[in-house]
Image 1 (cartoon, helix red, strand yellow):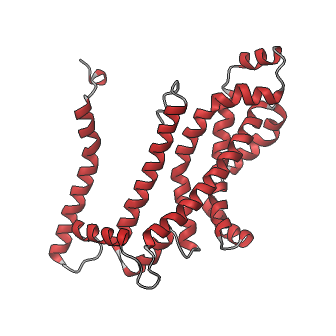
Image 2 (spheres, one colour; image 1 turned 30 degrees about the horizontal axis):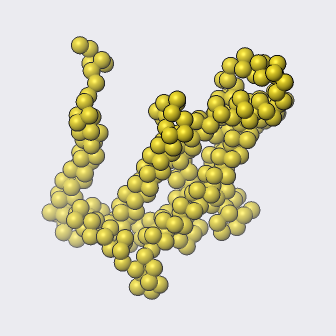
Image 3 (spheres, rainbow, N blue to C red; image 1 turned 120 degrees about the vertical axis):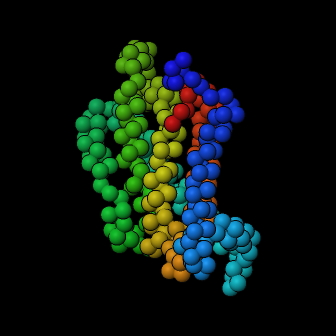
Length: 270
């Protein structure tokens, strides 16, 4: 039997999925042991036990000055910015994508502009956003919106264009208006893709959020990472990085579960 026709069983599939993570952890543990053996005071690769102890403290111990558990406070601040930015971008992307995909005049006027806008590096606009919107929450949210909205628009408008023309013609034959076609024909077919597009946009959204918080913020996950880097507190940095990764994974898993539940006819394989 050819290897492309062989499929692992449940147990083997789980083992294969966990193997890369185990190898990464093993490689880190070995590298940490080697460095600490040469220099016990080395801060670059702290021992796994040190990271676990630090993580336990970050999740449970309050700040000496304020009494707040900073990790939870930073998490709430970052998630609020992220969800706000992604939510606004999704609403704009969905509405504009529908319009571009269905209305030829809007497609002729906006498709080229959106294509060019999607090529602009969002981080290059960060100083402009700080000047225009200030150093508060709005500039950070706007960076996420500007960063992922053009890509969402291009993706969703193309999905609308991929709808068979026969469906549009039949709806018009039955007397449907343009608004009815958009809401009853196009929208239900691209909603599964909206979730898939948001899942793909979460990675860049986290990047833009961390970058904005690192430059101008007084709370947030990105702010904390760049604050402690000056002290070479790698145990704190690695804990925050692992926590951000877990949050991103949970959000992606939740969106995938939502897609499967809301649209069971679609294989949400993204």
